[in-house]
Length: 347
Image 1 (cartoon, rainbow, N blue to C red):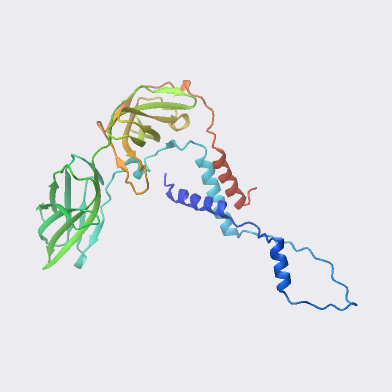
Image 2: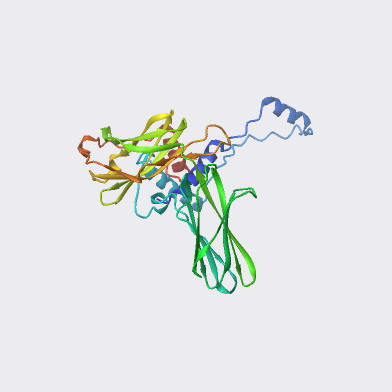
């Protein structure tokens, strides 16, 4: 959906709104103080004082800035047509369709050669192993090894020798029970008599909750409600994000739900707004789960859960039981929209 720039811009504009300077107000005592300090002026009796003049100051916004606000206002108005917990999803939304994707970065070497660390994903859960691949092009390498260390420290928790072909080298770290947090992967090799080191980062955690299943969907107003069953190991405030697809895997919506969960069996209900279902009545597929335990205090890290299955199938759902009522933004959202429209000269 490529909305990151819009969201950041709106946040900045909202800040401008709340902290926009108002008129300068000078207290009577301050006026008196200034008058007392000012040198006296002697006015001849023959000179009549001039009548006070009213000065009007008009503040205008330049055309380029006004056009920018028009674009932001239009985009934000479109955002408010759908609820934040149920956003439309398309095949172009690569980051949302694969939120745990690892993006390889190719490092150029001398003579037009290059090397790249490749991982299957960015975030791992215990007891998953960590397979690491080094792809090399245009150069001969030797003595290839890989080390795993806690991020921000020099403590190495595991090392492996990498083996393979001249173009592809690989090794696998088997998980240890005490791995938890951010880690750095360092791949080292020799090439043309020089030692080279490539680095990348990952996250490794013990699941604090596990998705165990999905209950029967039901209707409420304009929303299809999807109860997601969760086995909770650590109590806290959780956020669940998941993607909804058609039976033929056509992306429909990104669904988000929040709930405070106690240890044991819990549930987070996802809501799919009727408009994002695109007249598709199922069956559906629910997957691409991102289960997070939010920090309870400043400085605490986000912790993650996992799912017993990568996806769950949802049965046919009669859309006729849902209302066609449009989504109603809250007062604060409407105030932001009004502000943008004023800045754009639309009001």
